[in-house]
Image (cartoon, rainbow, N blue to C red; front, side, top):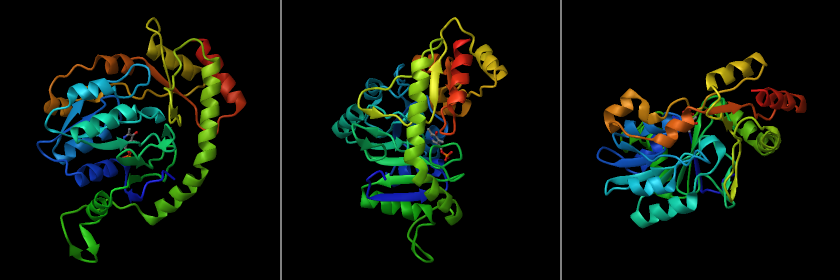
Length: 315
Ligand SMILES: *Cc1c(COP(=O)(O)O)cnc(C)c1O
């Protein structure tokens, strides 16, 4: 589906990130640059390798990591850049690619929310080593599960060995490895879901386009040039004068479910502060304090969308 040479199934997106980093040799003493505005797994997987996460603040329009902030964060210890295609919108891959090439740094894409998304016609997960999640809420799911995509035979081989106790031939252990396998039962569910993805993605896109055209009370999401967004989340920002908690309550009272992804940047958590210290991520802080994600899923009917718009415009 992505066009990559290898796709390696794992037990979760988190274990897929962990394996991808290890396959690239990321370990103690190395730095990995990533976004603080992400699900914590992006950062925890870096910590589990013994490497140090380094945060680059985000771009206020797309919520994705800012390529200029990545550039400023590069040091001689930088081993990898982990762009996170947040909400299903691809990051600035031309700029990130150029930085990676110039400095000889690997790209490990956290595409957990972006299966099906493309950047200038190229599928996310093919710009370096790609990582997807099949968790129950993701656009393609198996309940729990993950996937690594790569064109690099050596990286693929390392991921497969690390996934299964370093075993190529039965009971011959070439190296220390984990059990990060996906079960066959979950793979069967995932395959059916994968076949439904194109249609489900079209519905998400149509829903997002409708919401964008009708919502007036809050700032609607924007899509940067050259990207096909897959709308894992449809995320608005409340204006400064609006109380977000109050807005969430009023939506709830109107029967509209919403979510806050994410209420705090990864740089604010104690276990991460212990490693990176106090860092300032002002854009992430502002965004985290003002986002609300609204329903955009493929099962919404016209009447549902009308109700969502009415409730949001009444805020
Ligand atoms: C879901 C998610 C993950 C982790 O995937 P799991 O399958 O839940 O382990 C990692 N990064 C991001 C951005 C995610 O949304």
